[in-house]
Every structure is written in C-alpha cells, then in structure tokens.
Amino acid sequence: MIPAQNSALGLATSQAQNPSIPSATLSDPRAEQAWLAAERLEATFLAEMLKSAGFGEQANSMSGSPGEDQFASFQRSAIADNMVKAGGIGLAEHFFKAMMEAQNDARTDS
Image 1 (cartoon, rainbow, N blue to C red):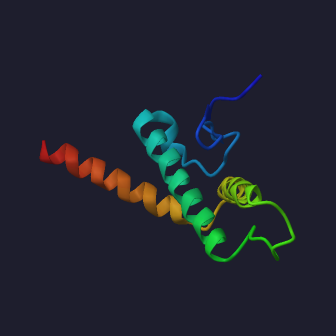
Image 2 (cartoon, rainbow, N blue to C red; image 1 turned 180 degrees about the vertical axis):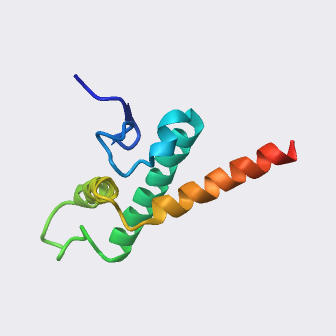
C-alpha cells in the first residue's frame, strides 16, 4: 500500500510518517498544504545549493556522457528531498510561518 504523499516530492502527509510536520497542520488542510509547499521550497533550495557546490559534476571529460549531467540533477533532487525528510536545515519552518502569516493577513483584510 502506498501512503498518502505529495506526488511532486514524495513527502508523507501524516505526522507518524514524517514527524517534522507540526501537529497543528493535521487539523487544518490549508496548513498541511502550506507545510508541504514549505518543505518543497526547502528541497528546491537545497538542490540548488548542492548544484552550486559542484555535487554530481563530471570529474573530467572521460568520466561519462553528456546525459550524466541530466541524471546528476535527479540525484541532487533526491538527496535534497531526503535531507528535508530528515529534518532539513530549518528553512521549511520559516517558509511555513511566513505563509501562515500571509494567509492570516489576507483573512483579516477581507
């Protein structure tokens, strides 16, 4: 059986499967969506940092084919996703708080 997941990232949507999800998000579907988006943003950021650090680059011109660069991006994304699942670097929490504050501000303005 496949657990409920965000198909773009593969992050579990239940706290039992992903303890980094704040417990308040379980009762609010909007908060849960915001949390998953925050994790996706953190994973994208981490993948770009891995790319900037040179992770997955060819060592020399004889180390592989041009397609190797394309597959290196998949590897960086997978590593970044796993880093976020393991707790990340704390960006998701900041993104989540900012999204929830923006959502609350939008509600009060209406």
